[in-house]
Length: 307
Image (spheres, rainbow, N blue to C red):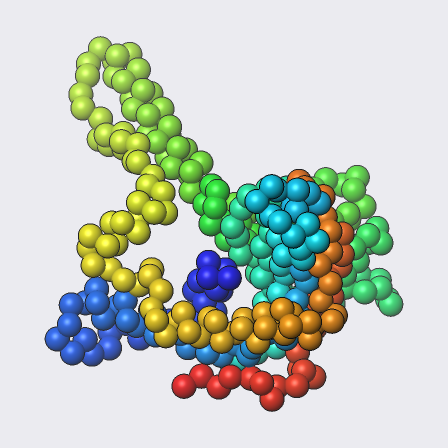
């Protein structure tokens, strides 16, 4: 809950008021407050979760652990939650948070899924939905993906027409990727190859001189906790949770947690799933259904107005 809301608040927050009055404080202290102020405003714009917006799961064999005495426990090891951020920028856009143990892969990422275009860009025939290619198969939605762990990267997936003349206008899903690790190694190798080529060229002309550009030294890539420790040393607090941010986070989850614990959320069933899979079998359809709803007809009586 804490780590996921950290990611959500950074995505949903508005731009801090850079250039505002610092009031005699250190610039780093002022910037830390500005960032955390915007994160709190984003969290306060999220209404409390209701049980109907929650999917829970537990992997087979969880209760086999000898430290778990209640073999009929319904403790969840997988959770998917839909939430809303009631701001002008994000209103009626569903946010789906997913976390699980013993699933198929370990990663942290943000997927911004774009809405379908009102009309098909490729292979559009009369009466055919924009979600289908000329071959009749569904087209995936365009996505912007921010991979946080492992192998930090940013990539955009989009639908493009297959190259060549023999594909009859078939559409393929393509990915444009910026990978932090591969980009760094590519730059380092490129400089090294350029340096070697320059030396060979110099020997061919029977004279040598220093290259214009020295190859860049490969930099150490610190992990997340090393960066946080460095922030502590520098006194930078923007990546740390403030007390009002923590309270705002619990105000979002507490009502649903209490309702589920007290059995009020009868619609929330803890579904079983196999270890090494991507969660309960119903998760994919649940996420697809919850992602399509705009929330425009939802009762907003519980919505929180940011102060």
